[in-house]
Image 1: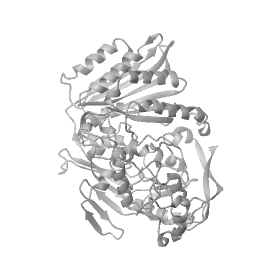
Image 2: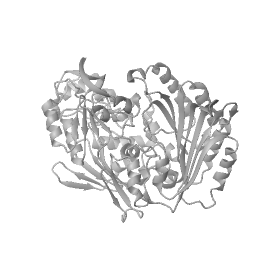
Image 3: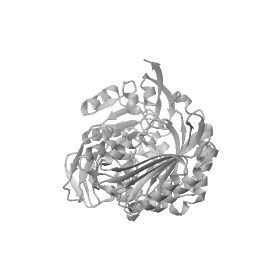
Length: 588
């Protein structure tokens, strides 16, 4: 989609649609008396919906919205820059990998430092703007129409400390704009690896904030398990540098306060993005690379002419994910891709299996390779087996995430659910229910050492620890058609995907934060289970006004404490206009 849009220039036309709000900012008594703002506990909070919270923000076109002079002052104060909808690079920075998530912020702030983030947060607070936070554009919560978008993608500083006293193999400090491929490249010279994503163009931040299931997690734990330190700009603009045992606060006047409290560190390793603050950097554990590593990559053709190998191949994948030794990790994909083999034989469906052993060949591979070789004799396939000495070699062979439009559902697949029913599920969805669409399921292998960490060590749903696969299924729509035509089948696809989700749920428990189910009443339990109440308490402690919010994020159901008059006086309005950015494509 990016290549398509790069052939056009974009002119943003501002249309103002009148919306009357029933709330008056700057008068807390009015807020408290409104039916939507009835206080129901001693914390002055109410049950709320994220759309209501966003509705209380200052919208484009309103009197309270920042002027050109205000935006110019912000721009000139930054080492980064401000981007507006009519700027040449606007779409490049507003772009989302999944066009289903495409939205158009009113202001984009490209931040380059901790200080830039602070200035952006304070600016947004002063004008009561709806803040969204973006790094790679792979997470739908990272954007919203009309929002004030803090973009982290150009924050790429790092430092490596091989002689760390916190971890024997060393540590690495990464700012949040680095891609995982960039990280793997820079670590190559140190013969080290970090637990990151195999989505090479994915960025560091969102992956870790949702827990981070990696093909290396079976060996080293989740990405969140490997974090030693996090620095974050909080909702009030203060900076917090937190570890498992303490948090250091940098106040606005430069003074430093240290408290022996690791709650914020706990919350930000699986509590989700966009709600506790804006991450400046992470410090991760490093792991020494072995002398060499085993890499197996197999492409199976499931249906070739009259030969149907789908059942034996899918059964083999089931066996692998339930019996793989803990030194092995990897992932798999099952899809109903259609093609033609050798010019005239129809191919329907493929399965890709990638297995990685973080140790040299030593003969113990027999149990894995023996059954694989037997299956290869019975199927059409393409197989690669290699003994790599550098981790980056495997990453260069791995695929890259491309622009797409997809509808995703997922579950943390539990081992007792890996039965013939799961095989039948794959076959029915690929070749039955979604045969006329591009459909796929992929699974990152979990379990192994990632299941040995205490369930309370991070806020993730306990299902993340007991699962053997982070399983996601997708319905894909072609993106080579005009943007506004890509949603033509939504009335058919979305109800079908909702029914798919109900069928998938019986195979597991717990959801990855990357999966958003609209109108899911159980989202708090699905993401975090018994940990949610503690997460909400931490959220209220560090952002009592619920200034940072997003869809189904911690605290998004709570309005937050009413802003006092002296703070909100500058925000007062009774009516506002909503700004709608309509993108007009004009050939260059």
